[in-house]
Each structure stands twice: as structure tokens, then as C-alpha cells.
Length: 374
Image 1 (cartoon, rainbow, N blue to C red):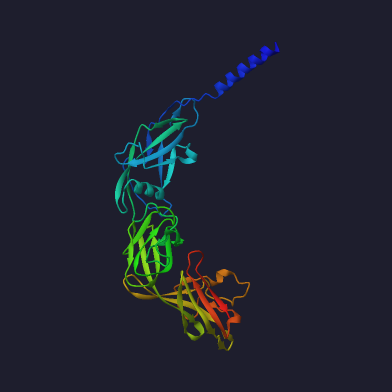
Image 2 (image 1 turned 120 degrees about the vertical axis):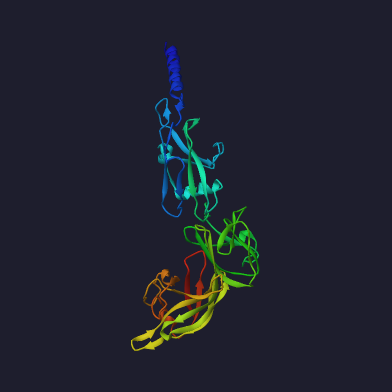
């Protein structure tokens, strides 16, 4: 009797297990796309927080359970067999709404072949899924987008390589640019005669970019023909703009004497160095004055000369000590170039001593400098 009871219970158990794991994937697709209106025009502003809301009526699962949604985009005239992009809806794919940033939509437009500064059309629909059952919405709608100047896909990193660079054309040795703002990269470096370009990685087969005039372009190469010179190369992928600034002399401005004490020479790798310079504070009635900052002589791409002042983030400072934070020596651009403001101060130990002065415009840390007392 006990044997038969075990058999009956086992049959009942496995019957229940089988029923419990049966999956009803039947559903009705999304019947209607509700927003945005068909053929809506959108002027994209990918550098802002602007978004577009895509909305639709719910799909209906036969068993009343949740349905997952994806919004698919394709080129005008496409059939979504190979959409250019797909996004899960809000709420992890369960809401019948997608909030898409202008940045992402700009990327979709680029993948669909709509060029920078051009206007083009995208089609979109909703794919509802229940298990393995995926149903395309009964409707497809169109949006018209105008792209700004700039890149739809901004690289995470940017490198400089080529025969004209300080490290040559070996991609693995490419020089990494510093990210100074979202989509903006720069490097202080020298270029000799030859070709150079930028890449998105220093391995494999990266995307490449070049400078043409004042623009950043996909692919291609730039060429240095003016001999060896020092530059600040700045690439803004948000608006496809490039700024090439020739760096001339860098001088140490000694505020108490209202003059430059000496020039600091480029040493390669984004650094400027000078050794064993005598520093003597100026005696005043109230004590000895030790304030200083730096000036860079520059030329733009048209050869127009100018100057940039580099100093402290503080209008006034105390003399540094061993407890002074490293941020004290960071190099900041300053627009107030009067005699006194935004100066650093030499440490007390520097007075009447030979000092090394090193400036670091390198990409691995904040721009900074150091004074080494001999």
C-alpha cells in the first residue's frame, strides 16, 4: 500500500511541475504609437540634457502578465529587419514609454547616415516580447531630425600618433590626450615635419581622426610642414572643431620686480624645465616679497601672436610649506594679468638659492609645476 501511495504522489508531483512550468507566450502587439506625432521635426541638441519621449499603447498578454518593450529605429524606407538601433523602454523594459536623450538620438541619426549639419528622417516602431514571442507594433512612425555640427559618437579616449610626433608611428606608443571637458581633448607636444593623426585607442584597429584647418574630420591624416614646433592641440568633438596653438616662450614673471626673470625651455613630453636659477626675494619695508606666475607667448593657426597668463587659482597665497596641498602648484589660466594678483609664492627656503623650475602640461594629471631648491 505504501509503495502504491508513493507512486501516486510522484505522478501528481511531476504533473503539477509540468503544469507549473508551462509558459503562455500569446499576446497582441502594440496597436498604436502615440508620441511623438508622425513626421515631428526635432532639432537635436546633444550637449544639453534635452530628451524626446516615445510612447505607445500597451501590448496585451493573454495571461495578463508583463510584456517587455524595445523601441527600434531604422533608416527611412527600412523594414526593421536590421534596425540601426534598439533601446529597452523605461523601467527596465516594462513601461510603454522610452525617454531618449538628444545625445543618443544624435548617435542613432549618425548610424542611419544623416551627416553633421544635415536634416534627415528616421522611422521607429515598438517590439513587444513575451518569452520567445516578439511582435512588431501595428504602426510605424517617422521623425525628422536636424543634426548639429559634431560627432554622433564621441570617443572615450583620444591618442596622437604618426611619424611627426615625439613617439613616432608605433600605435602602442601613441600619446594620450587629456580630457578637459566632455568631448574636449588636448595635448601639449612638439611636432616635426611629417604626418600625424588621432585615434580612439592605442591598440587594434581604432577609429581615426585628423585636423583640416579648424575642423576635426573622421579619417585622414594631418601634415606638419613648418619644421619642429611646440603646440597645444585641442579637439572638440561636440562641434567638430580643432584649435592648433603654437607655444612660444614660457617666462617666469617675478611680480616684485615687475619683469621676467628667465625663460623655461621645452623638455619634451609636455614638460618645460630649467635648472639652477638663482631666486632672490625683493626686500620691502614690510618684509621680503616672493610672488611669481608665468606667461606663455602663443600664435594661432593664422600666425597671430598673443599671450596667455598662467597662475594660481587664488588671488593671494601664503608661502608654501611641507603641509601645503599639491593643488597649490596647479597651473590655471588667468585673465587678470596685472602685476600682483593670482601669483604663487616661493617657499622661504628658495630665497638666495639656486632652484630648478619644472612645468608639467601632461595628460596624466592636473597641469602643475614644482620648484626644487638646490
